[in-house]
Length: 354
Image 1 (spheres, rainbow, N blue to C red):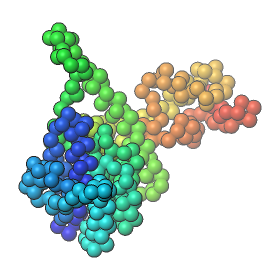
Image 2 (cartoon, rainbow, N blue to C red):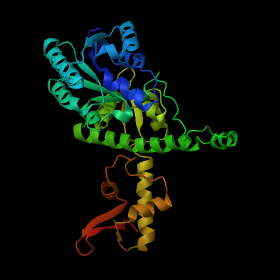
Image 3 (cartoon, one colour):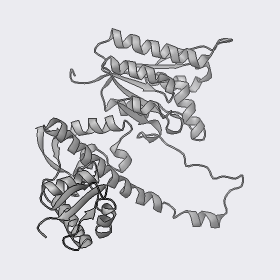
Image 4 (cartoon, rainbow, N blue to C red):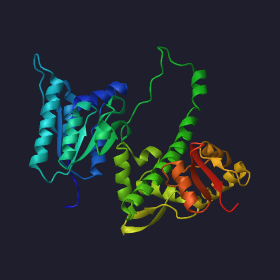
């Protein structure tokens, strides 16, 4: 139990519940998916929700059943109820951060950018901050400020109704039959997304290996991906766990997995040979063809030529931040020569050993 994160949950109820109802056709807000998501991250020791509860009678009973402490913010004449709730919630969170050292994680459930300074202050006090908000009503400023950000709409157990068709009259049966087989674009999207994710993962592994020189474990990689994008979740790409995602990338030779220091936390590395050497060979052959054997080829536009020869080519999948970095690695490996030309104002490549 000593190893578990202690979590304090602060819920800006009007922002979250009304945001969900406004953007999803009046669907009722359910606290349970948030509780389930946090149960996977640690032990929740504080649960507080802030609102004028006279407006949320049914919700009040639902939250009470989930052991949430209700903080009453009554509406006063001439005062802003919203600002009163925001200030009270921020003061309580900072007070708790100072008084309860054992609380390591604060969960701020809101999409309001006014809470960004609170998030910064909590992180300054060495607290991990997880944000929760409705996707369409969350300010763009809030997710990057958090260590991790969960969109309520995407949580397991949240039923998001399909968008209503525009127009007052119902669609004719013939129109319904025509529109039914439409989920094709959705089936194609994850393939493209996973391909982009593979490049990000490879680039991140390369960066971690270069900056520290030590082993890169799966848990460390996941933390780094969340620092880059606090909204990252493997479930958005169709994987149940991060380990399943890593195994998929390993099967496609994007990364390699080996036994790590702890069970269930494998070591992640980039393939030493294989695809990288094939890519160096591809670069050399393209330069050879374009240069006619001994002619120099400019770096500009060369990547497009490689993609014509191999459409799936991506230097980022191989762990390189840029195409120039990839070409430098190929030169170091002896596949090509690379030099800067002041006359051409570009890098020139020639095949080595032609």
